[in-house]
Image 1 (cartoon, one colour):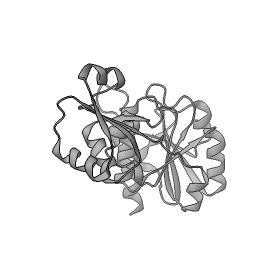
Image 2 (cartoon, one colour):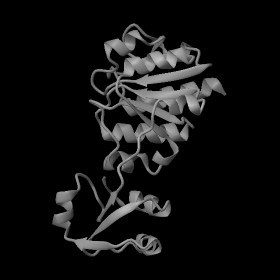
Image 3 (cartoon, one colour):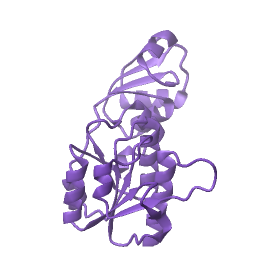
Image 4 (spheres, helix red, strand yellow):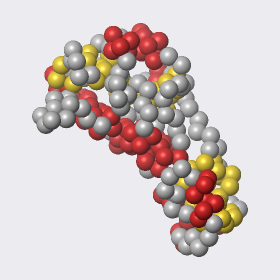
Length: 232
């Protein structure tokens, strides 16, 4: 997997993650990163900015790293770790939203995130950069079918709380005690009808301005901390 950016590079180098190859832009002059590269005894080579621009699909800050593909976890991880609050993502498309949600989950001490394998943005360079070094502290669980997964969670005592604008109640009026799985929907269409039908509660965040919805990562942040606040 190709990742890039100085903060990502520092984090991976400090954690001594397996880095297969490093490419630096001609004139790169970050002494801390050079020191970490030397400490980890990793070979690197230089390329022109144009060559690196052709490889990276975002702001690379003059450094590219080739690392092992991200390792996803299985659903059993939730039950083995006895998680009592998890987040489910229903086909998010924006890697910035995914990265921001991962960062929020880590900050709120959420241990696991469940997301589908298909029609869902996966862990990539943008996600790693946006999540700012928090990926190692979160179990990212990949599943083939969200509805079947929700049913398994219910069988194991979880209450499913979805976010939706219609047929929902104020998010502050829900009891979040017990085992909770919070579902965050797609940026454009929200949670799917099938997922919504399998939720125990549908929650909405009141809108007081002219806009009728929030960015997915912002809504996730509000909901996650409401769950945490109610469980203290």
